[in-house]
Length: 65
Image 1: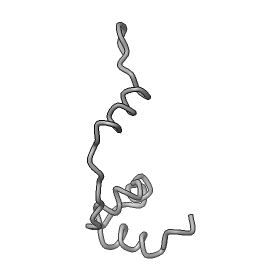
Image 2: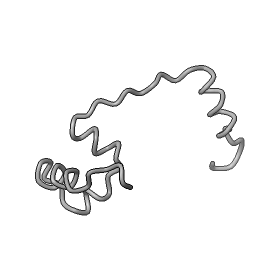
Image 3: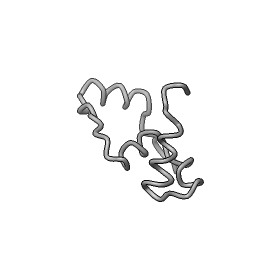
Image 4: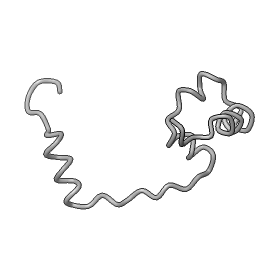
């Protein structure tokens, strides 16, 4: 992934946030950004997007799942 400055991110996570290596590598880029205080604009859930998700992941009837 060439879009990331890994040395800087590792310094921020391991030195700045005092994360253990396993904790750092278990994070998603979004989680790391949030922990570092980067603002992320989350678009609102629209009716169209809700319907799209409902069609893709319908509720199951009966059983456990």
